[in-house]
Length: 259
Image 1 (cartoon, rainbow, N blue to C red):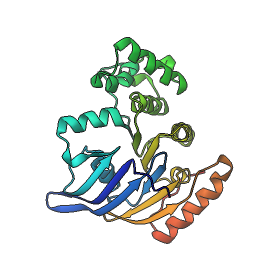
Image 2 (spheres, helix red, strand yellow; image 1 turned 90 degrees about the vertical axis):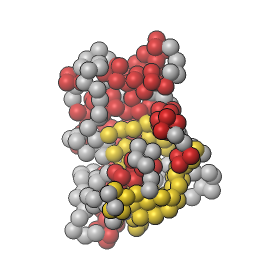
Image 3 (tube, rainbow, N blue to C red; image 1 turned 135 degrees about the vertical axis):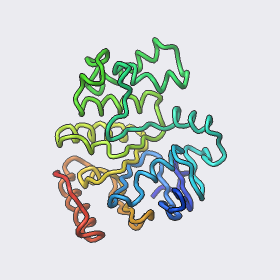
């Protein structure tokens, strides 16, 4: 493991809702260029962890820094700015705005951040959409695209501000196996180009592609599987390794997707 300053550094992180503690003193460091998958049974705190390390939820205790910025020292306005300029988000169901066309959905984070004139933002967005194979949908409504196409649009939106880190909450959870593989290929390409990626997932197929796999139980990280970089020829073997690891951790709870 590299000893460089982590892109994401959480220490003793706790989160409670209405007196119920969901995260119990989590320590998590993610370094530049890593692809990390976070797994665990439903209710283990995976999504809460993602929301808290991004500042979307306020931590109850501990510290979190992203790209050297201490989230606890920032105002809500500063946190929003950090999310716009440093983080990208990909969600299970896209969270695209139905009153905007798909191009405007991609442009929106950059427009809110006032990073460049609108014409430049449009060019940047269309270049991303071209790369993702969805440029032909630029003027279409959200209702006119398939689930896989909408996830590609979501990735374009996540990348429009050239973030340091991309956070994904079950980004393939609502997709069929073909669309899921395409989305994972794109995320893998982004990561190979240097963007740090952290994904919450239930799917061993997703985890097989990660450099590291973390396993959470009851708001704690209880295991950290170091896998190294993934090559396409190793995917089946790695999937089997993750499957066996999950079986050891929690034999009856692992639901494994196809390779």
